[in-house]
Every structure is written in C-alpha cells, then in structure tokens.
Length: 109
Image 1 (tube, one colour):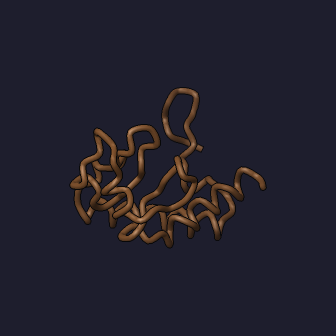
Image 2 (image 1 turned 90 degrees about the horizontal axis):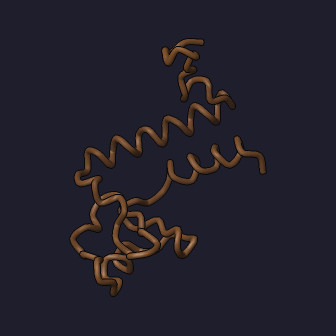
C-alpha cells in the first residue's frame, strides 16, 4: 500500500468511527469499548477522563486524548476528519489540505 493510500484509508476509517462507543488502542491494535478502558486496573487511570475522544495511552492505560473535554470539540474534530477524507478521496492530492510553504516561511504556491 502506498503512503497516500494509507492516509486516505486513515481518514476514511475515522470519518465513520463510532467515538461514542469505542476507544482507539495502539497497545491492542484495535478498538476497545470505552467501558473496558474506563475500568482498566491501572494506577493512573481515572474513569472520569473517558468522555468524548478516547485514545488509550499504551503504557499507563490513561486517556491520552482527555483534553478533548466537550462535545463541540469532538464535533469539530469529526468535521475536520470527514472534510479531509472527502477532499483526499475526490482530489487525490494533499494540495488543498496542506498549504505550501515557501523558503521564507510564508505561505505560497
């Protein structure tokens, strides 16, 4: 699989991801139920940190995305992911997602 195909697949997967039910787990290499993560026995894990965006920190089993603390932030993130997927799927280029940066640090093409 080419890198571009992998990126499109990433956005396709997370554009339809059920963030209300599942946590992302790099440790397990799959999605886990939020309840499974919420009640994992680990010294630093706090059940109250598993709210909106849930990404299991692989070493201490806490929610590494706990800074997403309200539904509006999650909605915004989901919109950005969906928009990125739609743009990549249609255009097959990063040009509209990532602005070009000139050598002087200014945006330009």
